[in-house]
Image 1 (cartoon, rainbow, N blue to C red):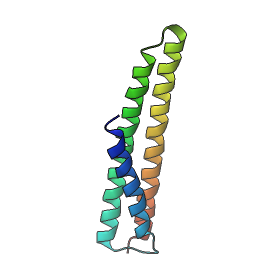
Image 2: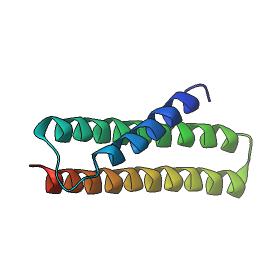
Image 3: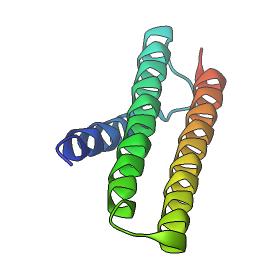
Image 4: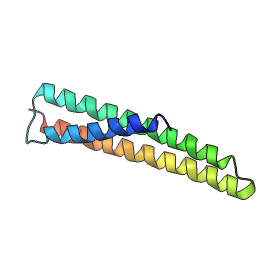
Length: 102
């Protein structure tokens, strides 16, 4: 749980930083900065998904039988979905950045 707050702060910071580049065009250096921020945000989101999965799996260990199996399945599915969402957001940001380059 200690890792959650810094990762959320990084994600929020990156999310608010990208719109500052939301103009019709951007310079090469601004595009590089936006791309770097997008990459860091993507990596942080993947790390957060893995941390959330680990935390959920720890809770599953207290269960038994079918409930435990279902809990583990849900934890893995949620982590996979979070990673897919992070990847989709990252890819969209990269497309947007390329479209705005001068």
